[in-house]
Image (cartoon, rainbow, N blue to C red; front, side, top):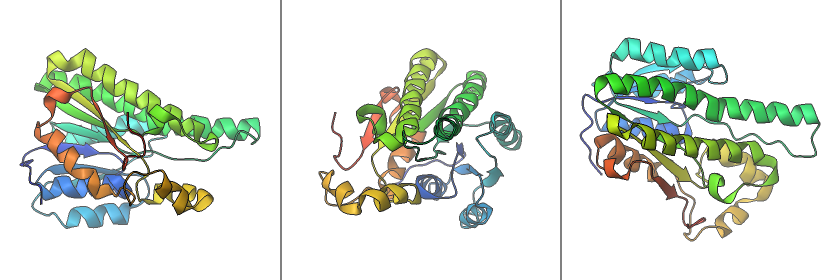
Length: 254
């Protein structure tokens, strides 16, 4: 197993009860990090995960990130518990279908919900994180983006692609603007990852279509991503700040 020493590191992971976020949180705790594990609804899964790592000071925090107030409150509660945060992993996101043939209000409702969760919440939390890191001597942020930000997405997921494009620009701007404060920022851009989030697209279009887009023979899984997060949080990629790292099984090569 790849090893990183993350002991005494306090790391906030949003959307940490399932999918990519769950594996990231698990890996970080395996490396002895204290994980502030955010969840929305799945309290049982979140608590079960941190129970496996009693030697860390990991805790769970509930918040509905569609609400700007709850996004702000999440940061405040985590900071109150840990006093110092070393890194933030922005993973929480939705992948909601809204075909252009839908009614105007329905289509726009999905657009607004997607932007609130996928872009507004990270923006609010990252602003608070920047100000905190300025006071504490620095920190790291990792934004889980998507290849959709670069190649686009199918017409029923316009909001998702737009939100991930904004997230990527946010990450780059943070890296450029605050590097002198020892603040580093990175984007991870997966393609399809074998999680519940991708299930609807695979159901609609078929797994064969997804696999045919890949250069490799199999879908990416969350454990293909988590070691890179560990490396970033350890400081091993600091001079790549501002970078976007593609993890998409060769389905989009730039």
